[in-house]
Amino acid sequence: MNKTIRNAAVFSLLLVLALLVRATWVQAYEGTALADNDKNRRKIIARYGQPLGDIVVAGSPVTGSKRTTGSDLAYQRSYADGPLYAAVTGYSSQAYGTTQLEGIYDKVLDGTDTRLKNPVDALTGKQQQPGDVLTTIDPAVQKAGYEALGDTKGAAVAIDPETGEILGMVSTPSYDPSAIAGTTDGEAWKKLLADPDKPLVNRALRQPLPPGSTFKLVVAAAALEDGLYGSVDDKTDSPDPYTPPGTTRVLENENKSAPCENATLRTALQYSCNNVFGKLAVDLGEDKVRAMAEKFGFNNSELDVPVRAYASVYPKDMDKPSTAYSGIGQFDVTATPLQMAMVSAAIANDGVMASPHMVSKVVDADGNTLNSYEDGASQRIVSASTAEQLRSAMVTVVDKGTGSNAQIDGVEVGGKTGTAQHGENNSKTPYAWFTSYATSDSGKQVAVAVMIEDSGAARSEVSGNGLAAPIAKKMMAAALKS
Image (cartoon, rainbow, N blue to C red):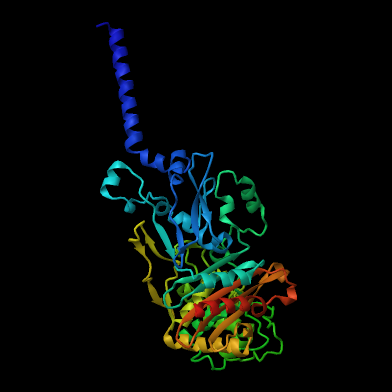
């Protein structure tokens, strides 16, 4: 054979072999990645080729699917009471992807989860009927919180202290997920992104802000657990006014006439005495306060409910003045409404925190359980004795102190107000907080935290009792009635 022809034949054979190797590599090793790529149009067509599974609240779906026309995407996601449940469901958009429960359980909801396929379907590649996600949300609690928050910028979370079930999760201003579910909703999407109130942000989980005086519950728990004081009725060593070591700046009390000098923890919580808790934080030291905060859930960057919450933060490496201000929930301390609801829930549940979660089950089309979250893990945060004393002091706050607007006739209600400074030298409108629990005569309990980021009210009218406590009251009453 001619040498030139032989070389050309060998080269051509090598090219064929290279093509075969490349094709095998793409199909055998890269096929799954390419099939799962979000830019793969076939994946989107398959997802919306049949009705999606539903997210269910109290036995009724709050999501649906509707037929489309003039598109290769046969179905589009729809929502019942979309703005009411947006902080729970998130959105499923043909153009902008998925978030919240829609995103976490997207394979169950579109029928591609391998647990939904029987052996025959696995061999044929047939897409199985989608499953459903059953939430722990109580519609009465959710509605009470949503309507009470109204047009304000804020959030609220309600938890069953014994089980950890999230009964309500509201973030306002909200949005309608149906408005961005299709492929031609670009203007609605741009409007949401441009809105300065950021309606797409789930403030209940992902807007950590200074918790103000609600954090004093954590400091009080640390003082009792450490043995710095044996009871909420022991007198503290707390001069008024109090100047933290290393500074000449006085830590002042909002209520100048309050009996805060050497006040007991009960009185200090009742009147929200800054001097007491600032000095407590310094006396304990930042490490002990941080250790207690972390027991309650602060500094946890992997808190999944199952949507991941942003970490609430208790900082490190503070000097003593900064430590004093951390004791009243200021400086660089931040918390989400979920976190502050967890604090009250643990105190209400005799010092034990049940893992918070807003999904009870994930099921297939026949109702068979794929995942169950009914028995969430729990851990002891403080002793039963400490929890009992803190509850007693929280009841005093509501019955005789700064949390009077949370009172419910015939119900034990304990709470703590907070008004957190905002802006340089407190130049902007403060944040209003309230964290609480309620126990009915039958023993049924609920814990609620409310955060008002901006109500539009005048600065002088902003307070945890005035703005946040009435919302918590309505959610607690709805939970106990359900």
